[in-house]
Image (cartoon, rainbow, N blue to C red; front, side, top):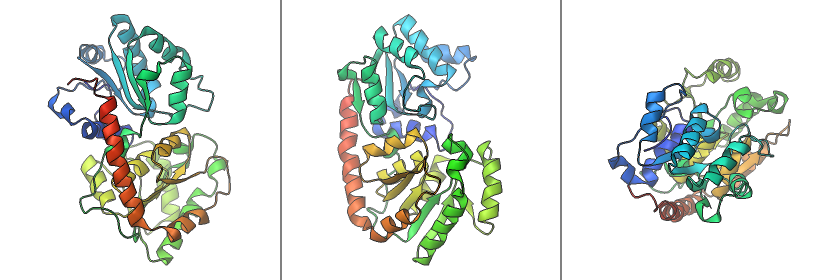
Length: 335
């Protein structure tokens, strides 16, 4: 049983779908999805009757009312709970006071049997709150394992996927932090193309997402003659990125699955979720949260110096090694 939502949105769903790649035996199980409605008591009761309660890696693992309700019921019913690939979300600012009381109660109840963390901050936070060392582990986010590259390692760097984000939606800091964001991305696009790169622009949300309306205004102003790619299904998502050779962007679940397929990636960190990239040491990255004039040329210098094949082969090997570690840590799940 997986506790989560099964709809594809290029966000949390990347980690949820990737779990079926990490644990292929899940494909033979009857899977119940909790959804996002805390008032859907019949659905939640069905979740709680499952053999395994699993929360896939997603920043919303401790923010939703459905999560809290299931936690409380797991404690009351002494039902084992498994958190696979959890990490920092949008609301964590460094002190981790958010949901500390609830997480402490969960740990002290003894029903938490396994917590695989996708970033060191979450790992040390759980340990500080009293989680035993034997049940808390640090491994790459499940999203790292979503895709494979059909044509083998990347050898060239001409085809670039440049992902754009809505500053207000993704930063959750201040508008000033992202002053000139689209001007800089336009400069980056033109500089890459002047180097002979073929650049395609992506937006990892569908057009029905509330973030798209404000994004669309800025996109049309800065890129009036450019096509924008977005992904209604997992198949279109994987096909698009597997057609590219290099990834540059701020989406955590852009850089992670792309790097897992062997693509050299440059991540632009906009909030605490960026710490998930640290568990894949071959992802280049820059934290652009606190500097109004972040340095675009740094990305271009990385691109100029890049030798894709060595990075691509290292990513593929790292994925293989850490996938084995994932399966060893989850061997307690007897599906």
